[in-house]
Length: 101
Image (cartoon, rainbow, N blue to C red; front, side):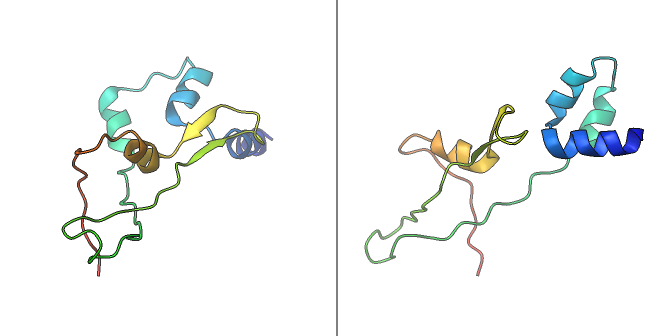
């Protein structure tokens, strides 16, 4: 019963780690354990939307900023990690990137 309730809660809420810790304040994790369990961010792949001849030495991307509400649209607003970061850049900022063949 408890496992089923947990699965329903997890899939309905889609909580982030900070939301889980806020929901269950009695959970106390050592910082080292917490950091060792966090997954590494995976690279985000985008298509180049500019022609090399039109903008020599530049690469242009078209990116939609990802936002969504959990809990069937009624929960907290979540933001995409990379798209939100890209949207906050200012002209002239450098973006660490690589080109995949």
